[in-house]
Amino acid sequence: MALINEDEALIAAALNGSAFAWEKLVKRYESRVYNQGLRLMGNPADAMDLCQEVFLGVYRNLHRFRGDAKFSSWLFRIAHNKSVDLNRRKRLMMVQAKPWSQEEDDGLDMYPAATGFEPDEKLDQSQANTQVMTMLAQLPMDQRLIVELKIYQSLTFEEIADMQDISTNTAKTRFYTALKKLKVVSEKDHVLP
Image 1 (cartoon, rainbow, N blue to C red):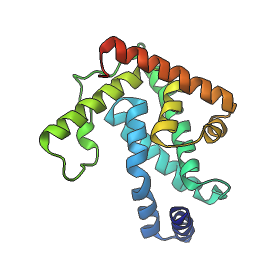
Image 2: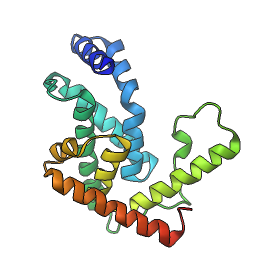
Image 3: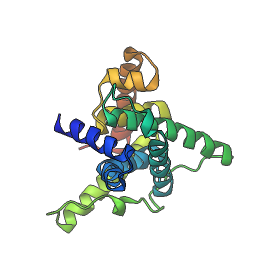
Image 4: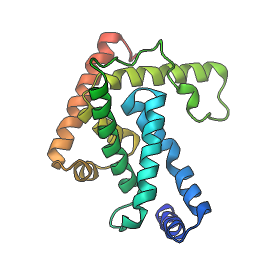
């Protein structure tokens, strides 16, 4: 509850022209938006583009935030819409989409470093992140978005359904269908122990 109240205070201050409040609001959510973008877009450059577009959109429309929902829900709805737009533009620009590959820069070095990790733990985490991103890249965008919102953003099916303008049952169906696909991929590739 304190986080919500602090968000509201920062929003009010930012709307009154406080650059410090705006910066603090961005810093609070930028890594979550970037990481969502990395999982959805598949590469660091597109994730960074998404992050910039999201915060530019939030800045331009902050006065429209009514407070009916949590600020984070509103922010991730904007991120969702921007990721769909970026994917559409990307598909239009590319005749044939090039799948994300492990040979490319995976951008995992851009994740915030956790304190106390030993080098072998960092390597294990990096390999696990690469596997997750590879598996998520195999899902259709609508299912990838549901997985992102449910698992990484901890939204309820009701919040996801509202965000995507679908029924709660459709959100659940897409989520569980995606999990089944991920399970098949992990078993096929022996990703899980």
